[in-house]
Length: 475
Length: 144
Ligand code: HEM
Ligand code: HEM
Ligand SMILES: [Fe+2]
Image (cartoon, rainbow over all chains, first blue to last red):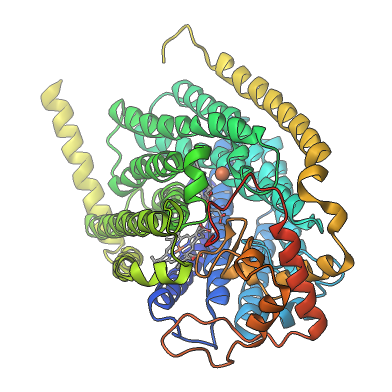
């Protein structure tokens, strides 16, 4: 760690991982409700569990992005963070606001929460992913403004780098697009239209800039490849992301009442959206191949390469699968959508956050890399979670294909609930894969506690000695 | 990537391309807004429909159901429930009203929301209006 203030990223990462655990527990509750319908009913109805699951996901990713920014912006700018104190104040504000919101979801019926928090004054609640009470949304905006101010001041006083610029554009974009969550027209069609300005233009727009910037940072640090090369890649990736992703929003405007030309525009542009994700895969593998140093943090390199591959599979391949209008006509709002949503969110955004955590946390704990034992444990966590997610995706895809076949693409469509009964086996399999995911997460978390400082130092010394020996032999 | 393709070229593609497509997207947004009234039949959005949407949101119905294919996938699509229930708002109201508070053993059940008569009528009207939006023939059939 080059600057003392970078360590403020630590609480952000800890909070992120804590909320991640909560997210998965509620995922498993819902997964069980899919097959044992009355599980926890009526104490925790499905819709409540779902809000907790998806909102925790978004909040932990935001904690992860903020932690990443607090860590890498000072290092890139070569200066201390503008205000460590502000970062701490915002940390507690965000954590408490988030925790209260989750408690609100669980403690009172949603309609009561809406009433208590004044949803009548400015109705913004009750829309997928944007279920937070309006005051929580205001809180998010305040935290985001303080955060952007803090980073902006840091960037201004320090060295300007491409990574910082791209990260800042992405974060400002994230905050700006979120403002559309306050716009809730009475006309459902217009409500849906602008809802996608938040959701799509986040994950297939500005968040890709954040993803690209963090990936570039981790690759520069672990491979030692020339900055010029990395920055050129970064620009091309984000150029393709926005060139395809902005009009790609049209793939959500096929069947919600919007004009039919969106079927053409959405299909053509979103069909190209896999390109930036494929470039990220190439980017990660190329940089690792051209590496100028053998970084002792093997786990971080694994996470970075894994992000490239899994983001491409989840967003690129599974996104393409159902993005053309004639296909989407049958798959829209089925388990196919859920399968893609899972692998894309995990492969792109969960994994990039774990990449930066993997790289940064050892530094914040005063070492270049963790001990071998710790890294091996971490890699076990990586594989368990990643393979489980592949299986979750495959099982949901299986469920989705059958659902489409029995309920949609047929002359004798069966009712929704009958189809759900028929495909229950896939939901059971998904639940088992979910349990192994949780095991993987526990193993991953355990890696932070195995192998002490001394082990880390010894393993590092060995690695350096080995490298020097190899150099001497080769030279 | 070779030497003739420089970083500043990549940067210009990023800024130029983004600005260009943002402008195109804004233009299309304006156009969509202009032609939407023909497709969404907004003339039928009565105060009751507005209240119905509010009831829909305040009870987080979208946390289990999908509407025009968006939302959750745990319970049936409701964009066309009006037709599925025989073009009857009464049938919709009756269904919502009759949900057992303790659920149905072993089955996925819908909560009892204890809606007032006014709210019931409003949400049913909201679903009726929704079912009349021109969705380019989606969903493919009555089962949603
Ligand atoms: C990391 C990037 C991505 C993430 C996190 C992501 C996530 C999601 C999620 C969560 C949904 C469901 C939204 C809802 O609840 O209604 C969704 C829908 C969709 N995504 Fe993605 N996505 C990503 C990239 C892509 C890409 C690159 C494509 C196309 C190639 C794509 C195509 C689609 C389509 C067509 C739908 C609509 C599905 C439907 O009609 O039900 N996505 N995405
Ligand atoms: C590991 C166990 C998990 C289980 C059992 C699980 C289960 C579920 C279930 C049942 C739903 C609701 C689907 C519906 O609406 O009917 C859901 C939604 C969702 N989950 Fe998970 N989940 C898990 C992990 C994850 C992870 C790791 C991520 C991302 C990193 C994630 C992201 C999402 C997203 C984005 C949605 C909304 C999808 C959409 O709207 O299409 N989940 N999950
Ligand atoms: Fe999208």
